[in-house]
Image (cartoon, rainbow, N blue to C red):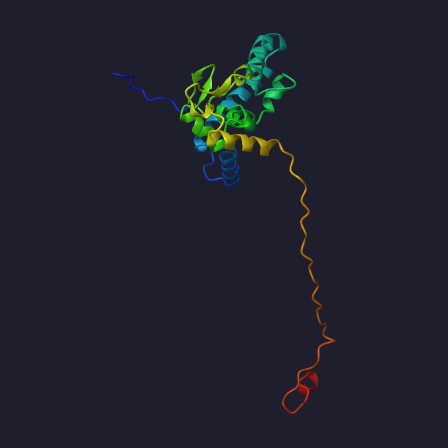
Length: 220
């Protein structure tokens, strides 16, 4: 028999389940990075929260005690490609969720021009068309290191190795559109005409059938 204990969740759900601003942000991230559902966002957000919690804990220690642990954390994030520039604990606290999502295998496959879109990249990964060091990888959410990024390509048995494959052509066209600089298009704005408004002095008094004025003088 297997282990009867239930597996622990790898993510923490939001404290406020009905938050309109969070809904909009999560939907935008799901569409931009081609995620399957919001659980993937929560999983990476929990991972980012763990890194930031480690950084805050190390900042509370004396410099002599945290030197070795700080180097391990910073080197790990730098190796993955999440952290760049100044390698300090303050930079770890400035990390955003997009920094982690950009290092996903699905995102890197699209950035390298191997897929026509983010959703197409996820399909290629899950169907076994993407390989890493001649080994098939089927996990779109896997974080890729800087060294591994150079070895991501199509698997040897994939039909996409053929240059004339329709999906390969679509991926090449998508990569060309991304690198191309869009031309500025002048949009002709509609001219708004101002409608003159009549004042009380310009309005003519209403008259009845006997051509008599129905203005204020009739009330006297």
